[in-house]
Image 1 (cartoon, rainbow, N blue to C red):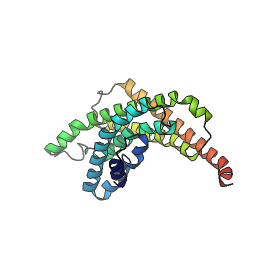
Image 2 (image 1 turned 90 degrees about the horizontal axis):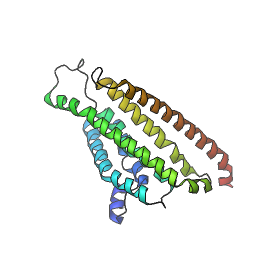
Image 3 (image 1 turned 30 degrees about the vertical axis):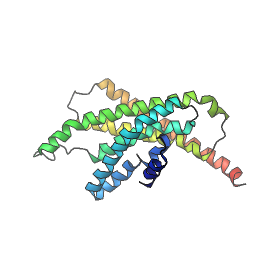
Length: 220
């Protein structure tokens, strides 16, 4: 909240480096929701509001501002990923087998749950495309950079994106009608998820090895 206040006070424009301090509230919302559902729902609402407020501006800035660093551009994909993952858990409807006597609100919730997940998944794909484009445009700059702890930002967004894809896969599996989802889509999502997890794990391990290798020189 203090970060948001300071950003408004200094009238700075959103970019992907804002997301851990703002959209990241969604990760806290999941934990809070287990102990206090009302507070969890409030934090989720704040996360979604900030997502739709900051994300379009951030997409435009990454596309037009080539001076922005590659690590910041790469963080673009975490904004909708955090929102999708958090919403998938907190707003998940109860199963018909568990609660056959559902209320009108729960009926409406089931009807909008999957479309909401699909909308956020579409934003996740847009974020991935934006991140890849930002990386490609700045590739020459990346080749000249020396490794720093900031390069850890290459691993977390990939793994967070993979977590969001898995949340969407689970939503389709549990709450779509039998035969409603194209088998080709399920296979594509599974392959995409495996690629993301493998790539994210590889990048995380490489960043860890590089960090330990450079640590003595930083201390000196």
